[in-house]
Length: 233
View 1 (cartoon, rainbow, N blue to C red):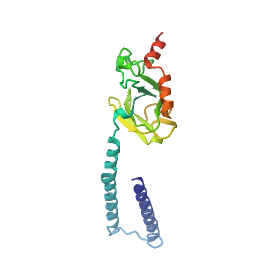
View 2 (spheres, rainbow, N blue to C red):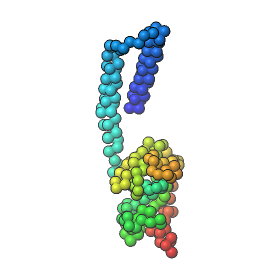
View 3 (cartoon, rainbow, N blue to C red):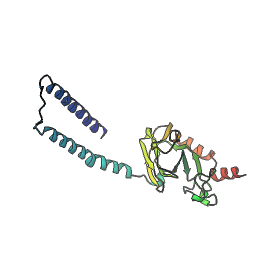
View 4 (tube, rainbow, N blue to C red):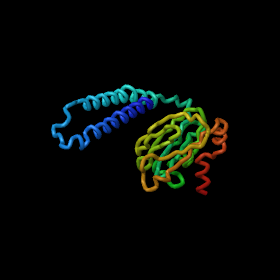
């Protein structure tokens, strides 16, 4: 798809560029001292513009929309994927893992605070093993990831360029996305939507680890409930 679009752009660039140079030379002042107010009678440019519009419509309707829908909607089964919540706010990425039980703990907007940015209900049994981080997303390599995006305040955009992932996080909506990290490393997470004066510093890191390293990180990272209790003492 990208190749076809680039070939189209090349054809348009050469075609229109050549036509522009031709008109400059063909209708130069030294040859046509007096302007012609009748204009060009040919409809060739109209036919060319129509052909380009039809070609672009075929690309969009025949290729882009079906391929995009097929790729985006082909979510892997949750049992075979890593589940994670990504909650944006000015100007951080809050990451929420469901823990060993695979169930996200209950959240409540009335529980949101500086120490509990996700409003996680520490009294909920399902929340007892949940893990949270800020601006750090840890994932195992070669395993599908389903991320549920949302926002606490304004529209943000979760952007991981190296993974070709970009999706708006919209207040009031939970938008699922999925991708498969295929190479171990540390990659940038950026906000691709102007979200306020601190937009430039809304930066996170994606750590793609081997399965062993990821499992070790899960074991060594204390659950949020434990950290929250320690901060309250």
